[in-house]
Amino acid sequence: MGDVHSDFVELDNVLQIFDKWRQDFTQSYTQTFVSSSLYKLLDPIIRINLISWNPLKDQDSIENLDWFIKLVKYCTSLKDSNGIYLDFAVIPNIFDSVIAQKLTTFIKVWDCFSAQESVCLCNHFKFIYIDNPLVNVSSNINKFLKELYNRMIEFCDFIFMPIFPARLIENEGSGALDFLIHQIQTSVQFLENCILWVGILDMKKLKNLVIVNIINRFIVLGLTQITNIFISINIFETVPLEWFKDPSDEDARILPNFMRAMQNILVNLQQTNQDDHEGIEKIRLVII
Image (tube, rainbow, N blue to C red; front, side, top):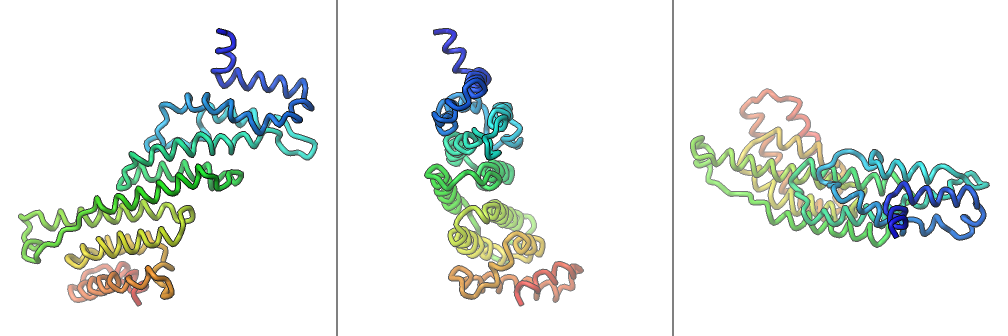
């Protein structure tokens, strides 16, 4: 029993056993469709290798992990008569059955306001879904996308945008201005983290989240109280420009509120003769 346990608990040992079968009895190996079911045997072994892996913190790509390097070496070492790797299908199956589920689990503790966590999560998902075209839109992928969207919607309720009287904002000792800017910047950071998922999440849902729930609900409310050209420009540089220019889009119809806020900032900047011609021009290009 000890030998059996040793043979099938280490990835190297399992791959060596199957490689010997593949090399010595290639026809038998192919006829039994090992490549279609091998991932099921490797699944628990790879899960053990991933116990300490945190996709929200670990920035190193999956392709640099030891188990993945070994798996790729095995799956790309033998081709069939058509020049196709016999076992390459094992990789996307592992991505779907192991990695996608692991990423979905971590969505529950993902801080949507954190740039680092958002970039890490997005990069890992892109590697298994965008960079690897063999991964189909499976139930595990759909579950990840659903949980991802729900988490971002949930975080909209964590944003608080205060409304201060002008006299309080103008009073430097009150701390109102600093707090208001902090809340606007938090909202913009959240917006940037959501935009990372353009091309992955359903576009209509993502636009609704960004335009209706973040820009119109929070950022506009904050920007009507202060003039901050840097925050305004940051929004325009983050959100795809065409989102502001599509009059047929239902969500874009509420953007006049945002545009009016930008117009007020533009007028204020011109009246106070602030020396930021480049910033003024960037705003003008969008609102005109």
